[in-house]
Length: 153
Image 1 (cartoon, rainbow, N blue to C red):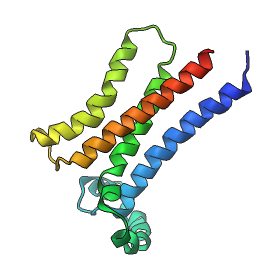
Image 2: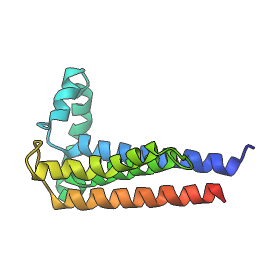
Image 3: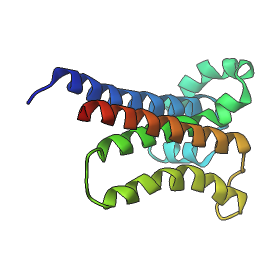
């Protein structure tokens, strides 16, 4: 049976996921150094010139923004969005494969940072990244579970 309230919540979950991932991406694009590999990818597909134009307007704000926002918040936002959408997508599913997908949440977010710590991948390990990724996972999973409980009532 069609339930308009559930549809609004469903759209809200997707919108919140999009906003968190998009915001994390925009922080990265606007204020991270352009020597990061990501910018090379943008250049390879011809998108660096418009991004460079956008960055020219945003870079004067850089000195006003705390480092944790520029360097760690995107990880937390991405982890939040990923946890939220995975928990939502697998709601009510009885398949054991959902546990694999649940496990990908910390493996990707926290595993990435720990791989940097142990030198398995290039990058700089940061406790702020670890903390904000963990917080993002926690808040995303809690919100997803809360929504799932409301839907099954």
